[in-house]
Length: 67
Image (cartoon, rainbow, N blue to C red; front, side, top):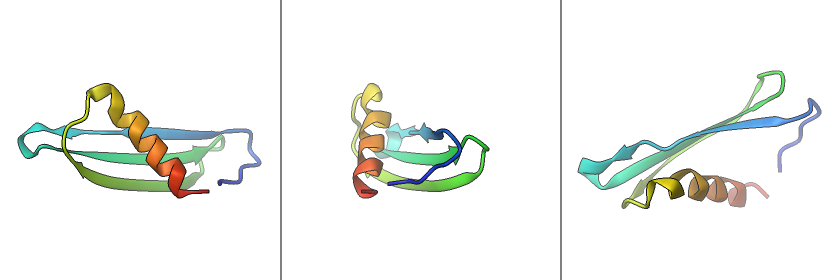
């Protein structure tokens, strides 16, 4: 997956919902404990899952893409 010698990785996830377009975006940014940039990604999705599922579903998707 990701290598890290600084102690921890921080993952920020944002999932804005676009009701008028029946879609939402999911974006994430990973930083290490020194605030060095590691990875960023953004994807768009059609549909409207419940709000509590946005970030969890996206995190699962990202982790599954980086073995």
